[in-house]
Length: 206
Image: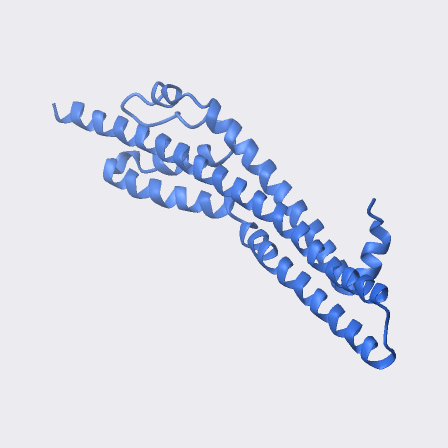
């Protein structure tokens, strides 16, 4: 059974750095996961027909009843250009969606950084541990048992680095997937509104 106190003690300062990095990274990942979960919940429950019915041919009121979130902000940004026509609405949709994706992606670069740097920190700790161990052997000599124990302790930081990097990589992949899915839903909403405006334009011209 692992003794985490001795594990961190033998791993040295780098093991503690990796531990703090892991705690911060997972806290950030869980925060982003909660934000994306709430956004996804709102977007999935959104009935596109609910947007169209209040609009009629005037383009007002369709977004007033939406719960706050990316979908509501995108709809509001698009409908602000209803009087400008479908072309202006299309440009507004791209801008609004990009802004929402930027907000949803906040913190992901930090998680990616942790996933990449943690194994290297672990390797650095192992190399430093091996240097210290062989230095001690060269100075005073050591038995094979002591050498094996020294190697084991030196590898602790490699284990710690991987324990930090693997969950961070998994969370990053999950968050990327959720953001891609939310982008698809936002684009579907924008296309629905733009098509509705184009139908209104056709009716007006007719």
